Length: 150
Image 1 (spheres, rainbow, N blue to C red):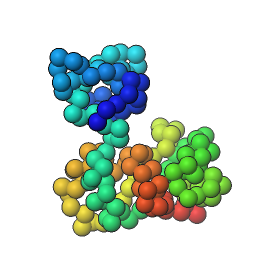
Image 2 (cartoon, rainbow, N blue to C red):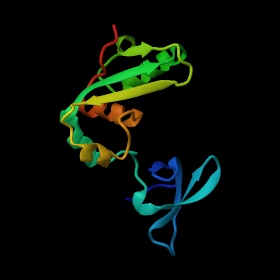
Image 3 (cartoon, rainbow, N blue to C red):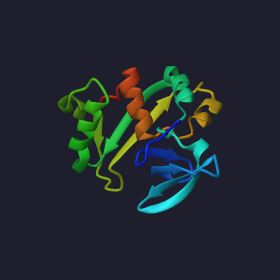
């Protein structure tokens, strides 16, 4: 896959980074930057998303629910993000978020799956079942809405 300079990409070694350029003399290596530091990464592992898309498509029939929690100070921003990634309006998205008093995290996404989900499929995803990006993809592409928190 061809990436553009400055494009946000995912690497298993460093997480989210900015792509800089492929190395000419080492075909499977590239430079990426994180917090202003230039790092070398294996080009074959660089992806535009952090999860294995093929495995994510196979996971869809097993998904039973998405549970979203966050501290009260970020509910409005999270509702806006949810409205951009689902059929929910900002106002109705608030009903799907459970506020916590815990100040240790901005937003937490828990994706629950059927107990009969093959363990090998979950491993092939490449991310735990609490990935914000995976939850956003499930909501946007497959209209799997979070569980309402009334």
